[in-house]
Amino acid sequence: MKATTVVPGVYRIKHGFVSSYVVESDDGLVLVDTGEPKDDEDIAEGLRLLGREAALIRHILVTHHHPDHMGGLAAMVRRTGASVYAHPVDAGVVRGDTPRQWPQWQGVVARVLGPLVVRMNARGGEPEPAQVDVEVDEGQRLPFAGGIRVIHTPGHTRGHLSFLLERDGGTLLVGDAAVNLAGIRSPAGRAGEIVTEDMPAAARSFRRLGEFDFEKAVFGHGEPILSGASERFRRRAGRGRS
Image (cartoon, rainbow, N blue to C red; front, side, top):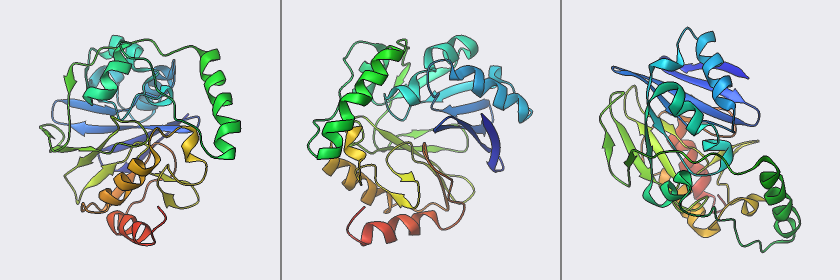
C-alpha cells in the first residue's frame, strides 16, 4: 500500500495493481473506488499516513462493478456510514441483484486468458453486496468538493462512470475508461477485451473524454497525469487507435 498527494486536496492510495482516490470536500472526504475485498484496511491506513481518518468519508463514488474497484465497498460503508453513488446499470451488480457480466472473448489472447480471470475471481468469491444510495448518470453534477461532473463512459462495463472534479483546472477521475501503463490508452486496446464488456463502446468513451477540458487525470491503473491531460487524451484519440 502506498499513499501520496496527487495535487492539494486529492490523494492516491495504491493497493496492489489498483488505485483509489480521496478528495477533500467541505463536508468531509469523497472516496472514489474501494479496491478488492479487505482493501478497506489499506485505504484506512493510507488515510492515516496522510493525516486523515476514514471516519471522515461522507461519499463513495463507484466507477464500475469489477471486484478490484468495489470489492471493499460493503466494509467501507460499515466503517464510515458514507453514501454510495453508482450508475443504474452497474448498481444492480453492486447490490448483488444482477449477475456480473464477463466479455464475449473473441481474440486468441482473450480466449486463453479470459477463463483464467474468471476462475481467479471465483476463488476469491464474489464481493459482498453493498448498498447504492444514489444512482447517477450522464450530465449530473454532484454538489460537493467544488462540484463533480458525472460522465457515463460505457464499454469497460455498461455502467462505467468517470468523474470530473471541476476545481483547480479540472481533475478527471478516469476509473478504467482509460489506463496509463506505458502510455495512455483505452482499456479496449491490446488485451483489454479480457475484462472489457464492449470494446467499440470503450473506444468511443475514450475518444469522448478528450472533448472535456481538464488539466489532470488519475487512473485506476497507472500513474497520474498532472498537466495537459485533456490534450494528451485528444492526441491519443487522434491517432485513431485508442
